[in-house]
Length: 216
Image (cartoon, rainbow, N blue to C red; front, side):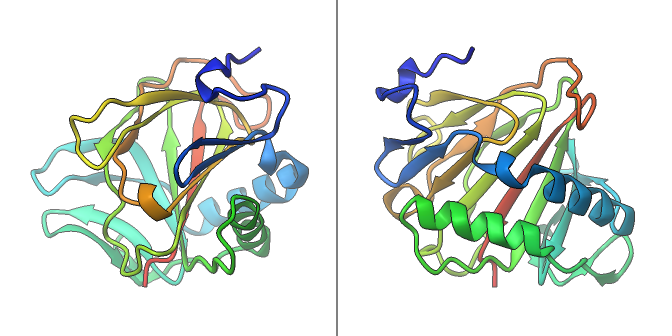
């Protein structure tokens, strides 16, 4: 059983405020789990996961794809959103209705009304993959929140402050958990510790992270 002491809240409460502008929704995505997984498999068939590189040429440990009007890309030209998948030179797949509904319902539950994401970054973490502390700052409208959905293997999410050196808290995330942040926390640094080896009954030896944004 997960340890929720760090949330300073009742562990039985599925909706927990863990900081100003940050809300944790325990197992929020499980009510629509099968539709989400079906949509995910369809998306990956259309736009497979690829390895991206930082502007300095380092390979990211996660593999990535996207859906929606724009997808997040990284290469020698920098971090940005593109309306086309650079691997195929085709538009990204349309965001599935199951994805859109989940993102809007999670944002609404967290207190962010009228969220209409136009991009979903999909990261695949296999054993050992991680995400260094970073800010989501390539979007044009910082008044809109970020909605992050965890599927598959568990992860430890790091959430800090406006400076990289700020103290971080560790949030244990399991299959179906959702974290929403915005407002004063919108540009907080965050990351993911290396994923431990394991096998999830629905997604196998991987963690999938769906991150919804208003990019354009």
